[in-house]
Length: 156
Image 1 (cartoon, rainbow, N blue to C red):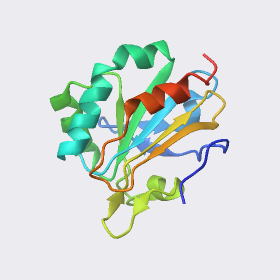
Image 2 (cartoon, helix red, strand yellow; image 1 turned 90 degrees about the vertical axis):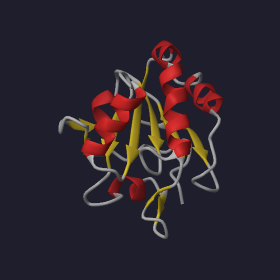
Image 3 (spheres, helix red, strand yellow; image 1 turned 30 degrees about the vertical axis):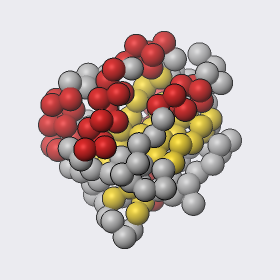
Image 4 (cartoon, one colour; image 1 turned 45 degrees about the vertical axis):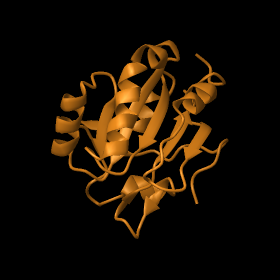
């Protein structure tokens, strides 16, 4: 079962495409976080989803939010995906080894598929989940406006 609104977001540290460690709690007190779990880099729906994220860069900045994308792909794949999409502000992270550790902690790992479901958690500056958006099937798109609605209740 996915982490619910009002709960503290489980902390984690994962590698970005450059091999640098990124820790969720490092954003506490500084920025809201939009934590986007996606199935696999370069899949059609994930490409559309992160193209939308790139198009909304200013809206995320205005909400004082950092977008963190997480999938089971390696950091090398994450880097290439980010470069090809022109993502400069969203940080893609590798939930690669142990595979799916963070998506399991958030209750969104799909054992039958070997990757996470499509799920987004909006986390405020205090580390509390203020919004959750889940899809029934990984091939379904989420409504990005749900993220912004949740960000509107986060203190800026």
